[in-house]
Every structure is written in structure tokens, then in C-alpha cells.
Figure (spheres, rainbow, N blue to C red):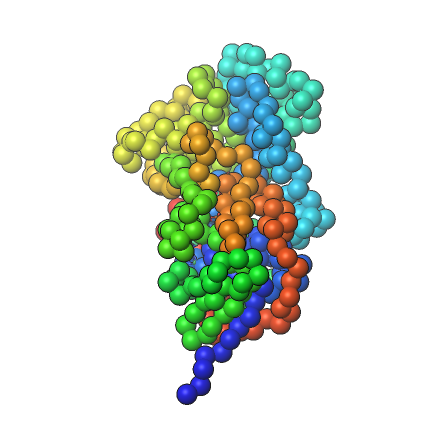
Length: 390
Ligand SMILES: Cc1cc2nc3c(=O)[nH]c(=O)nc-3n(C[C@H](O)[C@H](O)[C@H](O)COP(=O)(O)OP(=O)(O)OC[C@H]3O[C@@H](n4cnc5c(N)ncnc54)[C@H](O)[C@@H]3O)c2cc1C
């Protein structure tokens, strides 16, 4: 009787969202022998449902305070721009941003004290008040104030395709089952043993990047810590005939330090659909699709009154953000990677923070040991469709 082949690898990654794909590229470039398992379409859970903003966290400082943790995310737009210019850790020269800039807008009276905060030395170079003649086309008829941020927006599908292309033979379509995974004595240096179809794999490190599914993997693998928190969102998709895309936070008459609407635009046939997050989505989790659609129409009529919303069509999308559990239940401001013996558990917590995640994981790994890449007969995973195309 022939025994099943043994494949020896440095790293096995579970989950092909932005975290898994970024890490796989980073580690392959550093000589690690990497295999990634994705159970569905690449990016098909949080990553393609995200708004694609690469931001420096200014939207979290609308109370007028920059915290220490908001400094970590502030560096991310520059890190990503380096990648887009071909000078970063991942070569993204072929990727054109959906929008080179992101904006803040509101009726003039809203800004109040924020005006001096935005003009302060601590925000130099990160936010700039625009003259009306410099407003992007979607604001041509807007009479309020527009600020330009140093943030930008990526087409997440194009981003995932760019990351998948050089390593497609290592990104395999397979539902990783923790019951077929043996951690041995769990210590660093003890190989993790996996049974995948006909093959047996021995891998030095198992990296969990499974997003919302990570907690159940941790439970099944009997890893008690870290634990996960979910923060639900109820996003709104608006189809309309307005010809210009808009990428902006609306702050008109906000009463809490969170944008009232966070708007991105995405190609939809010959036109654009607008994808709405912000307070609308966080506070919309208790609303039904019908209630939230009506509310979104009211919000757009009030915040973006220069567009006629009568013919617009609304739909909604429920999606959870997965993060490491915080004592306060608040949002974490940094990427998360923690060693648990021969496993590493990751949540980027934001698309923007994936370069930070990469730094942390590289720090946690020993040098690569297994040069040869061995194939074991599974097909490659493909990029999933955007949730609004399904
Ligand atoms: C509505 C929304 C808007 C957002 N907007 C932004 C934004 O504009 N900017 C920003 O910086 N961040 C944003 N975020 C956050 C960002 O999208 C996430 O932090 C990031 O996409 C998480 O990536 P991930 O790879 O960890 O998870 P996911 O993208 O969820 O990937 C996890 C993958 O693991 C796979 N998987 C799970 N279990 C298994 C298994 N057993 N075997 C194999 N595969 C498995 C899943 O199929 C999935 O593809 C947003 C999030 C949401 C929900």
C-alpha cells in the first residue's frame, strides 16, 4: 500500500482575504515556502465588502484629539503609496487607485472648532481646505466646505487580483478543517501536521487569517487566547444616474465624533454605484432593509441635496468586522498578530493596517527552512465577485 505523499512547508496560511494574501506575498518574497487555503472566493467575506479606503485614521479624531494609537495608522497611507510606486515591500505598480484622494464635506457651520484642529501643526500635510474652484466634479453644485485628506481609495478586487497573480499556485481552494490538524506539543519548533485530501503536510507555522471564522478555528484547535470580537455593520448600496463618483465623509451637523456618511463609489455597468457606511451603517444594524433604505434616502436628501434622489434604488448589506477582543469593546487601532506556540493568529482590523500586520508577522517568524515548493493537486482559488454584484 503506498503511503500518502508528505509535503514540508515553512508556513501554512488559512484564509485568503487581504491579510492572508498580503502575508503570502510578503513571505514568499522573503524565501518562505508558503501554502494558503481559501474555502471560498478570495476576498469574498470582509475584504470585498470593505470601502477600500486607505486612510490615516483622521476620521477617528473628529473629537479634536489625536491619540497615540491613531499615530500608528497615520503612517499607513505613505506605506501603501510606496507600494503603488514600486518602492514598498509589495510591488503594486500595476494598480491604479479608484480615487487618489478622499474628502470631508459639510455645511460651513458644522466645522466650528474642527477648523482650528484641521489647521493645527499636528495635522500638517494630512488635511487641506479646498477652494471651491478645486472641488472635485461631484461637488460642483455644493455650497459648503470641502477638505481634502491624504487618504485614497483602492479597487479591492483589482488589489486582490494583483496580490493573487504572482502566487496563484500557492493559493489553494480548500476548506481547512481543524479536525485534520495536529499541533503536537504546540511549542515553536514542533511542526504542525495537516491532512489535506490525499496529502500530508508538515508546516513550521500555521497562520490563522480566517476573519470572522477565526474564533471557531481557535475553539476547535483548543487555543484559549486570543479571542475575537465582531462589530456589525449594515451598509447601503445606492444605484442612481448621477454621472460623478464621490469619495467623501459627510460631517454635516454631526453630533458624535463619527462621519454621518462615509461614501465611496464603485463601477456599476456604465455608471457608478455609491456605497454608504459611517454612522448610517453602524447605527443601521437594528434597522430592517426597508427602514434603513428609507433612512438612507432621507440622509442623502439632507446631506447631498444637489442631486435628485427620486429615482435612486437602494439595497443593503449586513457584514461583520472581525477584530481581537478589546476590554472596552472599542475598535482596535493597530493590526494584531500573536504567537500561540506553533500558530500565529492575525486580524489586520483594517485594510489600511495590513502593512503593519506584515511587519508584526515577519518579526514573529524564524528564518525559512524549506526551499522547494511542492504541488499537491488542489485547484487555485479565484477572486470572489463584489457583494453588490451577487
Ligand atoms: C463594510 C466594511 C467596510 C470596511 N471598510 C474599510 C475601509 O474602507 N478601509 C479599511 O482600512 N478597512 C475597512 N474595513 C476593514 C477591512 O475590510 C478588514 O479589516 C479586512 O478586509 C479583513 O481582512 P481579512 O483578510 O482579515 O478577512 P476576510 O477578508 O474576511 O478574509 C478571511 C478569509 O478567510 C476565509 N476562511 C475562513 N475560514 C476558512 C477555512 N476554514 N478554510 C479556508 N478559508 C477560510 C474566508 O473565506 C475569507 O475569505 C471594512 C470592513 C467592512 C466589513
